[in-house]
Image (spheres, rainbow over the protein chains, first blue to last red):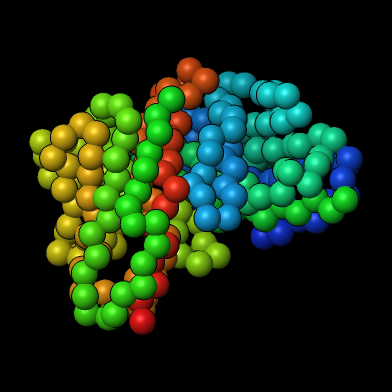
Length: 111
Length: 117
């Protein structure tokens, strides 16, 4: 069956360091992968989308990579800040009609 | 962008009762989605609701348990019927949206936190 996995349930990072979150998929080839941020008590908020033919995408301090050989996407937050603390969700789909979410990684940035 | 509101934001219900959750969008959208997020878990799609047609349910979810209405292009309801403690979850609605030019993205509402006793 198609699976999307986020390796770390929780990640603790010192402020100022780069946080790297991992998303792996098996048994399918997604056309794209998305990353969302979810704060407690709120719905997910879209951050970045990367397509299968793209190696890397950037947005301010965020960077996403997509390695179709490793079947993996990495999500980086550089110069991390306590305000970056949240749960980050990886998701995939072939259209907007059905997106499958990973279990999420809870990121904590300590001052 | 789309702004989505949900009512109620939270509720505590007795087992065996039903709760209807409302989802309002500030613009007309074709597809609306209902998700469940159980404690500590990720989002699971319950169904897709298109205006003017029956909702399409995902495996493991049935209309008798989660009836959905979609009377117009800006509104939808999800009812959680004959509730049990296992239905305690956050229920989220979402809509497709062209965020940063990507049709494949979704906007989410704030969620409805349900506790069944």
